[in-house]
Length: 152
Ligand code: AMP
Ligand code: ZN
Image (tube, rainbow, N blue to C red):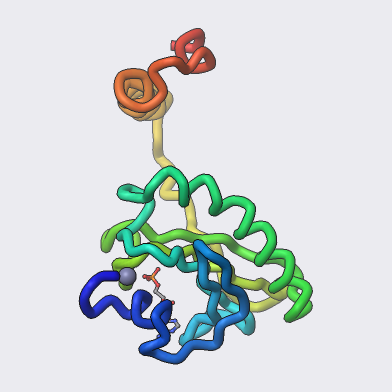
């Protein structure tokens, strides 16, 4: 529970919300300003900001709950598809600093366009980017990764 966190207040019941699901670890509510009908937020009950400071025991549970709720929402509003989105940090569009996953139902012809690639990357640019990221992966994150080690 963080002071003045709007999602912590939804979890404690201080602020009302259109809840559609709740278990020990997550609360799922309709987004107050939906992109499309059924736009929902999967909110972990413990306060952390985003993917970068997420406890492992919660990240391990995100896949199953996202799948379950995505199926329910898609069927519930008869959507044609659904986007799963997490905005991490301000530069990525995160407005509420309590981690959450957006489940956004999509309808044929709903008019939303996807991100457009900037283009212009040369093979050298790709190789540089690939190496920068792989260096971090190999040295910090997955030191035992066979897949990346054999490919480096
Ligand atoms: P983000 O930019 O990923 O941080 O998205 C925050 C989302 O929270 C936005 O889509 C808001 O519409 C939504 N939101 C903010 N306040 C509430 C609230 N009280 N109940 C439900 N959704 C909310
Ligand atoms: Zn919070």
